Every structure is written in C-alpha cells, then in structure tokens.
Image 1 (cartoon, rainbow, N blue to C red):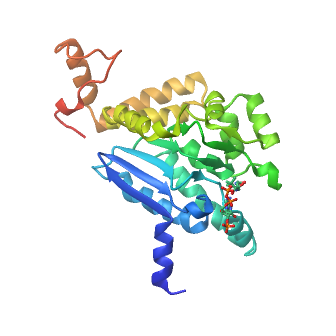
Image 2: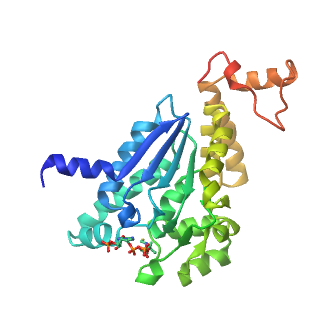
Amino acid sequence: MSTATATAADTDVVGFRVENRIAWVSFNRPEKRNAMNPPLNRRMLQVLEELEFRDDVGVLVLTGAGNSWSAGMDLKEYFRETEAQGLKGTRKAQSEAYAWWKKLRWYQKPTIAMVNGWCFGGGYGPLFACDLAIAAEEATFGLSEINWGILPGGGATKVAVDSMSFRDAMYHTLTGEPISGRKAAEWRLVNEAVPLARLQERVIELAGVLLKKNPVTIKAAKDAVRRVKEMTYENAEDYLIRAQEAANSFDNEGRKEGIRQFIDEKSYKPGLATYDTSKQSNKR
Ligand code: COA
C-alpha cells in the first residue's frame, strides 16, 4: 500500500465539522459498525487535539456514521491482529485507545455523546468520557464481552459500576443482554433517551445551554464532578476551594459580572438562568 493511500484511509475513519460553535465528530467506519481499530484510535486523538482549543468550538458532540454509534473494539484489527504481534502489539493498541478516551474525559470543552445506534463494549470508554450522553430510544447498548469470552476491560466494567446501580451493573456485565436506549436512560448509563428522529434536535438544544455558560467555569465544574467522586468530603471541600481559586485566576471577572447582573442590573436570576457572558469585559 502506498503512503498516500494509507494516509487517506486513516484520516477518513473519523469525520468532523464545526457548525455554530458545535464540533460534530463521528466514528466513521459505518460498514464495520464503527468498531474502533488502531487507525481510528490514532486519528481520533489527532482530531480531538486539533479541535480542543479552537475559538470557534464551544461544545463537542461525538456521534457515529450510519446506524451505529460504535460496536466497540474491532475484534479483528484491535484484538486478533495486535495480539499476533505479541504483548508489545497489545499494549500499543491499548495505549492508543486509552489515550483519546483520557483526552476526552478531561477535555477543555464540554462534550456530549449523541448515541444514534449500536453501542457495545469498548464503546463504553468514550461514552463515559463524554460529559453528557443523549441516546436514541432505538439505540442498543450492551456489555457484549461476556458473550465472546472476555471480561469487559478497557474501563468498561468501571463505567458500568460508576454509572449504574450495583445490581444493574452486575446483571448487565454477566448476562451480556442488549438493552435499548430507553433502558440505558433508566439505568443511568445515559442522561436521557429520545426518539431517533428528535435526537439531533435535542443535542443541539442541550449544546445551546452549555454554550451560554462561562467557558472557564464549565471546564472547572466538569473536572470537579469527575474528581470529587473519589474524594472524602473533607478532601473535596478543599479541592473545590482551590479549583475555584484557580478558575478565578483565569477569569476573575466572570463571577463578578454574574453578581453584578443579578444584584445591580437585575437582568436575570441565577436560580433560573445564566448571566449574559457577552457583556463581560474580558470575554473568553
Ligand atoms: N469488530 C470487528 N468487526 C465488527 C465489529 C467489531 N466489534 N462489529 C461489527 N463488525 C463488522 C462485521 O464483522 C461485519 O463485517 P463484514 O461486513 O466484513 O462481514 C460488519 O462489521 C457488519 O457487521 P454485522 O454483524 O453484519 O452487522 P449487523 O448490523 O447485523 O450487527 C452488531 C451489528 C453490532 C450487533 C454486530 O456487528 C456485533 O455484534 N458486533 C460486535 C459487537 C461487540 O461485541 N463489540 C464489543 C467489542 S469489545
């Protein structure tokens, strides 16, 4: 294969475009149900890095081309073919996948998983990495690993336990039974499920809510949610003081403007809406 051909194929496995401050990123191997192979994992990290600090991007949405979100890791190219290269091949493939999931977990911009179809196994890594997740009711989720003879690795078991009740996580892991998007919402694997026909509209609506927030605050807040989960109350209290102070050093005007618009201008109520960030002198 010529280098030029390899580059074109490797780039195509991830699609992206930016529209109205939303970066739409998609798994793009629909003929393979968007299973994650090494080229996709490598390309996804590049795309995420390219978009992360762009001024025209305020929210990132991760979705899938065709009728699938992602059918998880590619059993042939991610597992069988890399295992054939020995431990080195396996570890390399793992680190390439885990690298972009980690990038996404701590992404600068808020992220939404728009789950349009199949979502299996390794797909739970990027699903959990997204801050929010909206699924089509018609989507299908499953920890299918048990069905082909492995335990749900790559963080998938942790995702189930962190998102669901103990009983649901255990049932989901041991039976490998697929569940609908509606059930995934009931089990709290995603925030909500809507009919597929309304999925994009709902995601745009949610992105619109996030786009109105102060971007420095939203990054600090999403990191705080992930961090405090594993802290004692005392540690969390201390971390949150410091996280707020660190955020203030990046944007010392935001909260003052938020207070001013409520107390002096009386133009909004923080309990009910967001302050107008466009009036802030040091807009970000
Ligand atoms: N790894 C590798 N190839 C995969 C794949 C995966 N995870 N998921 C789908 N594919 C491939 C199929 O092998 C098939 O390839 P082919 O056209 O060369 O034969 C193609 O994608 C289409 O898949 P197919 O099974 O025919 O599609 P479907 O719509 O009937 O079923 C699924 C969709 C997702 C239910 C089914 O493909 C499936 O069970 N995939 C595996 C899911 C899984 O266990 N993932 C966890 C991995 S950790």
